[in-house]
Image 1: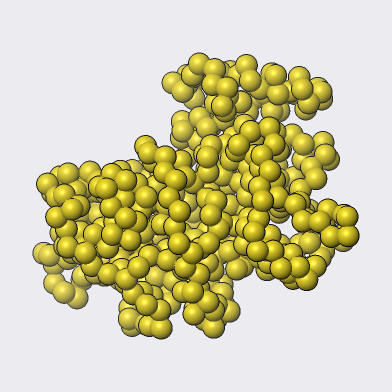
Image 2: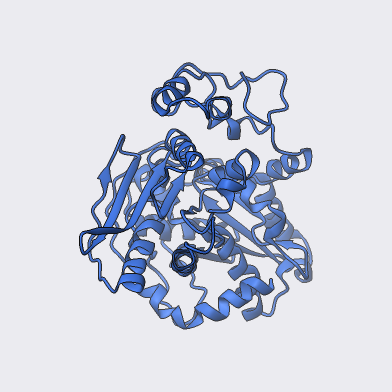
Length: 418
């Protein structure tokens, strides 16, 4: 048995059955005509995990593979050393953007609060020669705002446009790559068109920030620290380059583990690093504390879009959202009722087993949801790429996004230009 579209004669990714996510791509394509119960029983007997469709990397071109390999500590240090040796006219401005999903890992590993971890990580990076350290939460806020707008538009066009609903939203490159490489237009036409926070941050750094600093985008080397290895592949997409300078919005992605390896190579303990405030892209935003959207589950798309749609479409203010777990904790739904009728039905689907079931029902025309937040990892981003599982209640700090709201529409135009 092989993953669909696989080019390898032998696969080293065969694993024993895993009840939590043991489903195969072959099973999906070969069982469309059977009953739902039998389909799921067949899927449970597969020996190649759907996650292996990503992990084997056989769908990558040789060029992609070489470029992913370049996104490592050596490339990071190459730029640092280049700045130390070459003439100042040839220096690269080193900017590092930290995903908030990476911070709980550092906080747990070094027994720090999330804000302390962010400031000490900033201090460590700047001690190496990094010029700017940003928090990507502001980019996540922009992505959510644009996703809200798109969902309302899709909902209003649902009777005229066949593929308007459901809308799938996700910043998960694993899910997006799988959908584009394996699934048909039946699924991809439902994916939200808003950029991911990583790439919005790339647009901000290589566009807005570069203009503020009177720099051309190719003079900035932009690094993203993220928990997920697949973010490296996302950064390589051809549509994520600045058109005029042919410069990638994100030059290099380093995982949380790779940053720890750099610390170990330098014999640095996080507790010994001086705290330095994280930089702000916007002058009117307060520097220092890491901000985070108040969607408390993974990406936060579901909660924000649900509340916005309830207000915009039905005039209802939703303060608290109640999740209802269905077959497992990684597939939960949220509904909105008005006059005894369910007017909004949202779901969160985490892990490939739930994604598989979702796709099967969509193909059969039995999919009842208006919106689904999708992530490839079981448990969502809380478990993505991190060896520790954390349950940290972070304080809601949406004020930064509201302060930057006046810049939002002009920035959307900027994203289209670059």
